[in-house]
Every structure is written in structure tokens, then in C-alpha cells.
Length: 251
Image (cartoon, rainbow, N blue to C red; front, side, top):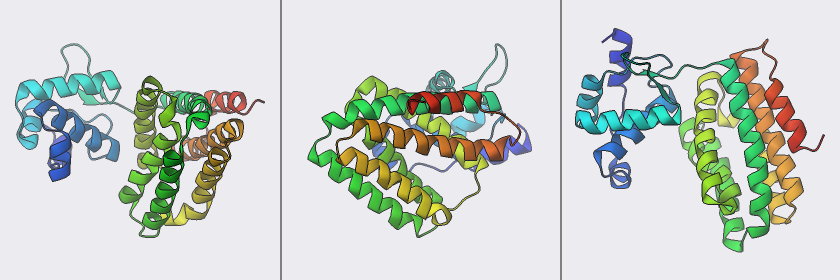
């Protein structure tokens, strides 16, 4: 095991009590912990994944760990060629372009389906999450801010249907991985802009305007995508993202 991969394995945080209750079996616990470590960059693109070392660090058996790695491979977080050790999936400009294009297209569709199905408790939940984002942004704690931010985006599309929700959850997690890796920002620095965008989306939802909500969400995601790309690959032309934005905004 290389020094780099050993360091990555040692950075894996053990799940807290709440996580342990939510992921009681070994497969679920290993999958959750490794997925979180990959998304946060504790396990970096290209890092080799030693089953022996990871099983020891996570306190699980080799069988459940192998199953967790297979799930991560299906989800696109881990890559393994025949007869080679599994590695954390690499980043690429093409993948980032495709990923955000898919998310813009599907999330804009999902919110347009969800808005007419929103009930009062859904709208109250959006306001609660907006307030939590503002509160945590003031602390400058990126990881704390990510929790209500992720929940806000999922709440926007919750009534759209479980299959759509599952697909969007996976796309969102991949997008978060890119964003955390390439965008060196603090929620406090972007608070005014991102808060205004999120509240604009929520206002359209509360007004029952599915079309306006869909466009506002697409524009918000598109801006984020272009910021990430400007830092990850300044000279890359995001054809897919721009086309997805045009379609979502009816241009």
C-alpha cells in the first residue's frame, strides 16, 4: 500500500452513533463511510483501495467490504478493471459536463412535476431549510452548510416520484464531489448570491409557478456548474451544460 493510500485510509472517520443506527449492517456501514470519504476528498481520485487495510480500518469483514465496493462501482464512485485493484474514480472534464447537464435537465423536470403536488408541510420544510442554510453559512463551516443545502434540493423534488428522486440523489452526490474538490469557497463568501437564488426558487414553488421554479432551478444549477468548470478546466467549453440550460429555459 502506498504512503498516499495509507494516509487516505487513516483519514476515514468512524461513523458516529446516529450514523451507526442508520447503517446497522456491515455492508451499509462500509458503503456509507467510503462514499462519504470519496465525496469529501478524504479518498482522492485514483487512490488504490486495499481491501485488507479498509476492512481493518472500518472494522468490517472482507465479504461485506467487497459488496460495498461493488455498490460504489455501480454508482460510479469506484473504478476497477479486471484483475486490477479497485481505485477511486477519476475526475474528467467530459464527465463533469455530462453530469451537470443531466442534473440540470432532470432536476428542472422534477421540480415542474413536484410543484403542483406540494402541500403546506412541504413549503414549511423549504423555509426551515433556507433558514438553516443561512445560519450555518454564517459559521463558515462548509460541511455543516452542505447538510441543509442537500436536503433543500431534495425537498424541492420530493413529490416528483421515488425513481426520479433516487437518480437525482446520485447525480447530486457526484456533483458535490466535484464542487468540494475544485471550488475553494466558504458559504459566508457566497451567502448573499446563493441565498438569493435558493429563496427565488422557493418563492416560485410557493407561488405554485412550476415553470418559473423550473427555470430558476436550472439557472442556479447552471451557474454552479460553470463556476466549478471555470476552476477545474478554465479552457473547456461545456457544450452539454449550455445545451441543457437552453432546453430547460425554453431557449
